[in-house]
Image 1 (cartoon, rainbow, N blue to C red):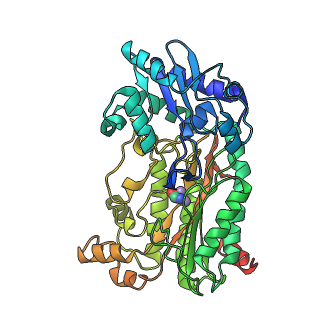
Image 2: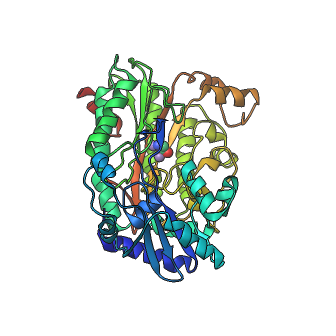
Image 3: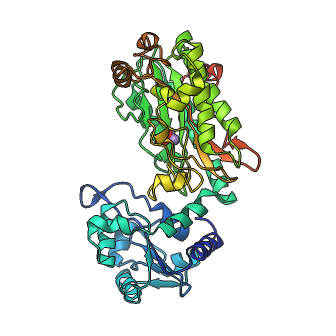
Amino acid sequence: MFEKEVYVNRRNRLQTIVNSGVILILGNNDSSMNYPANSYHFRQDSTFLYFFGIDLQGLAGIIDVDNNRHILFGDGYTLDDIIWMGPQSSLVSKAERVGIPEVLPFKKLFEVVGDAIKQGRKIHFTPPYRGENIMLLSDLLGLDYRWVKDYASTSLIMACIELRSIKEPIEIEEMERHMEVAYKMHTTAMRMAHPGVSEQEITGVIEGISMSRGGMVSFPVICSVRGETLHNHYHGNILKTGDLLLVDAGSESPMHYATDHTRTIPVGGHFTAQQKAIYQIVLDANNKAREATRPGAFYRDVHYTACRTIANGLKSVGLMKGDIETAIQEGAHALFFPHGLGHMLGLDVHDMEDYNDTLVGYDSEISRSSQFGLRSLRLGRRLKPGFVLTNEPGIYFIPALIDNWRNEKKFEAFINYNEVEKYKNFGGIRLEDDILVTSDGARILGNRIPIDVEDVETEVAKKR
Ligand code: GLY
Ligand code: MN
Ligand code: MN
């Protein structure tokens, strides 16, 4: 937990921006896995963590803007709780730690919200994403559970995005400190990437590194020799020489800030000439995109910088042809790069995506495209110092997509389908770093995980 002033300051700034009404922020509860008492690993709601800081179940917070009251709702600990959970400081002292003077029993939330509704005051809440909180909001607000999300407050969402997009120096320190764990996870995967080892074994070891150094992984690990499947969670393959292993994995810091990196590793430690050529194009796209990342630039233009590098590179190896600028404008390169260059990173790996990814990544200056590929770009708007982003270009050979486009004779002026056929078993390459937008550019957070061809080959050779 940060110092009390951090949370007081955040709530005060939020209340100033929202300006009127009652802000209701629900914490998360344990969620059952396969029977009631066997729950998933507890994860506090990120908005609650940001403004109220307490990493425990059974809580809700209210910021009554009109009356300048900040209240924590929760129940004190019973002897039974203490038997199962261990000794607990009182809720009042936990609230004091984050600068909240007023603590009320949880059931009082109904009274406080009910009174505000009777007075015709606006209740602001962000879109709920868990069934339990959808039901609670339905009860609190007297709304049909099916429509609760439609009543989420756009002004609260916009205020939260404004604050959380710019990482405070203490947040950057926390994120940067945890990059060491990401480094360890990915270099360990490299050292394990030898013939005969299973994807499952590597997945387990790197998840273990995360757990032993901070917390759970920040999203389910992607560790696959079928890297062309963008979010491949199947880990049943045994590695063999010639495979490319794509590892996209991140860890939550002790305060729940996420890392998110991808490396693509030649099993056994030697890229083939064909792999090296495609790898180098992705690496160039990654480096050029970072160099183009600076305050004031639209991230969509940075995405286009990566697209241009990828498409020109693919032309140089004979997979694309024709006028590359036109190919990119029409979206032909998305056969190989069907996702966005990056997204915001923070308390969530896709930061603030519970609010609505278009509101996070676009604004009145720039709207989201519906074009295949570009529509998956979660961040298009102008960058500001303090944004933390991922930079994750990739090239993939997805047999089903290639067949589909070829049958439809799509973009025949730009794609050499006869050449592409030869790559159908290639897999995919993605190279992802976490970067901070600075006052005049961008920099990688933490020590860069080995990424140059020789450095990756050297790391694999070290073995574990
Ligand atoms: N780990 C998911 C992503 O890179 O967006
Ligand atoms: Mn990732
Ligand atoms: Mn990512």
